[in-house]
Length: 284
Ligand code: PAF
Image 1 (cartoon, helix red, strand yellow):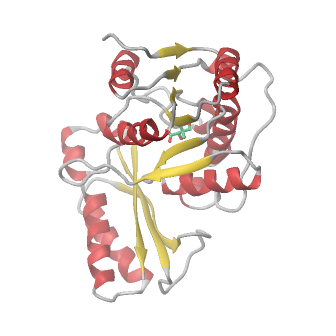
Image 2: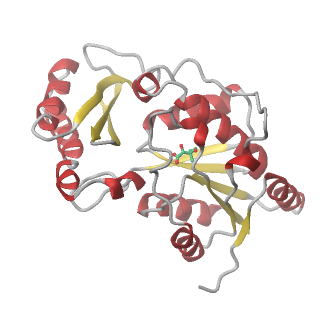
């Protein structure tokens, strides 16, 4: 496909390019991804495309956010397809580095967010958010964006990165966009492609559980255990193994028994070695 997409492979070239763009007074919008793009990623790119002079996207399956027994090698990849999609969405610069150029030998500096990273996915995947924060901090230093757009499906990631940006004074605004779903309600994820056809059918139970919680909450139920049980019963009818189902304060991510003003309902479920997450926010 003919388009003006520029692919940059090294941190040095990216930083030189974006420094020049900033000097020319161009605004830069940034969408970080791990590739195998789907409508969810594309919706973030469309938001950034409308607002910025220059749209930068990155594709990097970041090894430091995967634990030793996780799916780093199995994570789906298809660069040609991703490149075409980036062309269609009007991406100007696609950063596609290798792990060697991103992490120099003996790289020994890390970014750790300590208040929000210890629960939910952080509790199940030790070191995960250290890897996410470190790579996003590096990407922000390379892309120098005015704003970055993130998906709300990764609810904890969004909150952790907002906190990191606030605490470390990164001069970037974070925008978020709601989860894009398949027609049956399953949240779009690159990992969905690794589900068997039976698991794909069962995976909609995450969405169904959340929908039941929304209904009961609207009918006045405020007991977190009662609401969590609704999700658990739905998942337990499938082959999915529950990593966690939590209903917690939407800002502090601390747990409570009786739902207060704004609650985050979040869950992670494994189908074979494919781990899916989803969430909903309940506002009283
Ligand atoms: O959400 C993701 O795809 C990744 O965690 C991110 C933000 C690109 C960092 O590697």
